[in-house]
Image: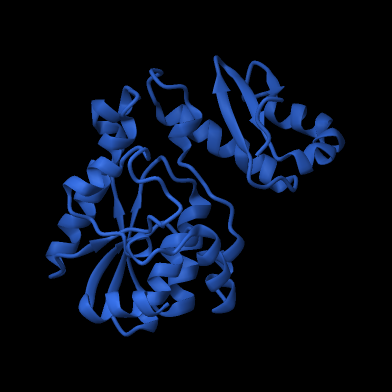
Length: 249
């Protein structure tokens, strides 16, 4: 972690766009570990389920980091609400602009994010917004891959080390279909139900008014065991419940 230590030696005061996921959690720990004055900023929107905020608060408390929660109405922006192909760009602009504004109020002009060396920065939706807003990505700059970050997170005792990747709830809604609070809340409720049954690292995508389940191949046996319960629990929320056999996570 020598390169990361050097980064924080040169940048001793920073604001971190914090999600409570593997990457930003490790970066927050590293900033604290290497003596930086680093503050976490979590932007709460309808796109994040409640457990993400709880994980973020728990991680920040575990390592003694200061965390500020910013509430943002992303659906107030038509460029986000209408769900175009570049929705992520507009959403990132909105979220990181809110972080930049809050950080500046706190006397901080450097904003970091958790993009790592495994991420394809040229193709990832929203990366253009980060470049435009001059957000820096120390993990990527220091060549730390996702696998290495998980290894280091485990070594230093972060509970997030094996946390599955989580894409925001808006990704469950097909491009071009307007995003509403009801659709997001229904998805959050449905995924919480599956999680309570023992499923992990899965998605419930909207297909018309039906639920399309995308689960790991290793959990197909669990799916068979829980089939009746899934239909009973998700049936009232959707017109139909189907399994996507083309996608196994």
